[in-house]
Image (cartoon, rainbow, N blue to C red; front, side, top):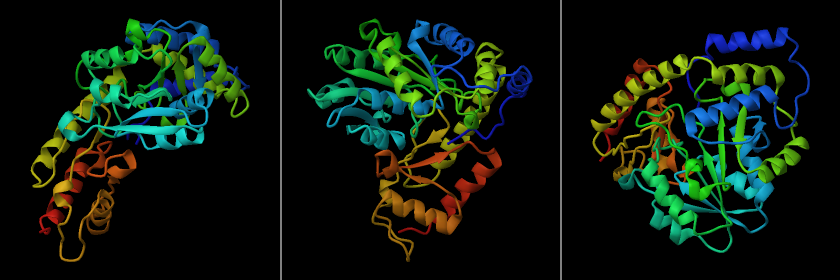
Length: 359
């Protein structure tokens, strides 16, 4: 998913100026100094995280940051606990590193958020890392400070586990101020905080991610990245360094627009019998439960899975949904509301009309 907004004009202007100023050469593997300094400032300002310059690395997107971490720390057979529902790439990223993904499933009744009790039961001597996103793709769920502190109490009792916190949707948070698990004292030096420019700044195509973490991990990721992609593009980093420290007004306007769409989508789905829509506090997705439709038919198609449901919706309404099984939960589907209010109203109206034929 990506915002339907264009990159703000002032950030484009930063990039144009960077090109004019000669930012067209190779960059250090860990990133331009000015960009890493801006990231350092952002971490302190927004997240109460204090990372040294040797604890920050820039990558070609947050996905590469997560992949770098897994490739650097996971050995064959190591377990990586992943909170489910999860972003689709997590399973393959862990698998490509030789690891075994251990999903912990949280359903709609618990707002798709894993509890400390669930986490404790999932940890084994082979657990190498815990990976999750907040705000979450696909559910939009956001862990509160108190919930993260509960998780941290469990993690702190297991000294050799690294936390990989995917915070790419940080700025699209409709509730309280975003809280980073890395700010919890008991986990000092044990959290890799992953973020990037894609979602909050509508810069998906710029491919600029970054990670803050212990120096040993940054060093390992730099060795790996240096033999795969090298450093991220120069003019993009220069523009991003300015964007992080500039006015966040355009980012807040995007969040406000998403908040309006969120309310619209939730209310529209609540009027469709058989669909239980969650109440996302972040990102730009809803993740409704449609298990009540399993076993029902429109006279031609019988729904037995989220894949059946999404295929039927696509064929009969031309609305694209993503089956929840791709995210680890086969009872749900994901809809992105990174679209106009008019299009969202029309799409969900089509879904409602079609589903009325099911018995």
